[in-house]
Image (cartoon, rainbow, N blue to C red):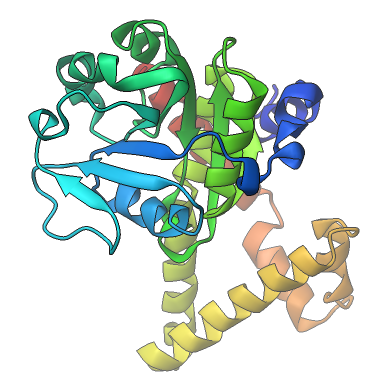
Length: 292
């Protein structure tokens, strides 16, 4: 059976190169998407906005609950406050259950040649496009580390999205971390299972690892420092040695009959952890499909 991870890797490798490599031709100095409307500015929208502001776009936020906008950003509480203004990009950052009611009012606000970008989980490209009169739509699935500029995001574009639109959306998301292009919304659900929900898995693994360190006699702060420092350094090493497989890196710190070998045998000698992680991403993917 093909796992979500394997399918994601294979699909990403086969994505239409002409369309997605357009981002390498993108120049902020020639940016044609200057005016951006952000509908909703909750935790994720706000986190991404902090990094989007490193570009040269002008942002307007519509959010009745936003207490304070970043410096230089226009903020209004409702649609009526922006009257007949138009925007090059409309970013949808509201809850999916609000989309059918809210989006039609913004249909006239998308300028000719503009596009919509959605970070609303579960709302399909077809649904959003219909509500916006057939607009070009690019769906994005970011994850929680966007808050610290380390997001890993998936992007999926409608067939009518142009190279310029795709390039701009990719550049926007790369300001907040890294971006992986996929060629179907089913694959975007798999991105959700692997990366969107992924921080939760990592936090849980770290929590259990810290609890095990405390069980060996370290106090809570010592255990947290040891475990998170080890995880941070190990990930940094893996990123720095992209020419090596993770199996080779693991073996490089594992001496036959040594302490690491003993620990690894207890951890995953029978394949339990590997199986659990396969079950984890599959369960998340299955739930994402149910929520479409």
